[in-house]
Image (cartoon, rainbow, N blue to C red; front, side, top):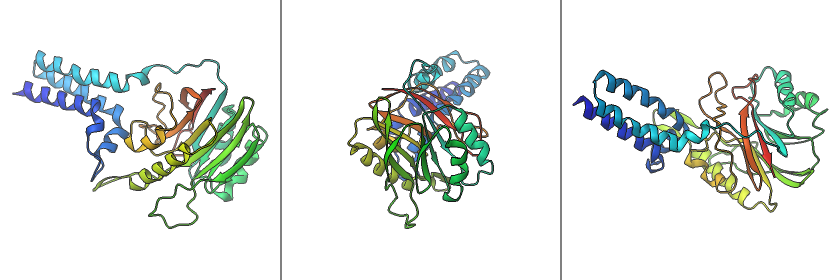
Length: 304
């Protein structure tokens, strides 16, 4: 009897990992919840193996290989190190946190990363000058709209606000995305900085309606971008496994290598900060040292 229970648990876990897209997303949005923390489902494997050992069941132990194989197929690519090969651009993404009390230290961490572009969110207008005071020597070009900003080593020839406001948000000052055209040494690139609404886990399940709507709006805007080369920098409050991000991933993509968990900063469990691109290749993604934010800064290398 115990063998059957353990084997059934192994089959169920393998199905959740390998067939997560089939989990329905209506109601409590169980599909998105599973996908947000998909790599961590692998922790169920050692528990099943322990149960098989205690039950002295070879059959149960063999069946436990199913979720192992499913995990390797879905998440195994992230175990491979990113390619630190020659690159054209280095980009940094960071949610600064609107309650960050170490703004100067945070700015120094971002500047010292040596990136070409720095995209930030939760940038309050009242403290923008504090960040610029540290960054402007290395990044003389910057643009801010609402609570998002971009600092660049290269000229920014135009910038504008991008509307990704969900229909249920009636705050006219809720502005969380911008588009800028950056003149890099290899030509123009459209750079978007975006901050999708937060997701909330409560008694009713995974509340992500606003985030999902913003993702659709952002995806449509990216798809309509006239420039061929596009970089998206942002706190998307989504992992790349989460189906809610599909409207965005239909246009831009990122590397599958390296977990680079960025949130929460104290004990990161998910990469909800993203650096993605079209007509450029993201070859490596990693996190920087912790700042005064509840997110870790994310860095990426890109090639044309």
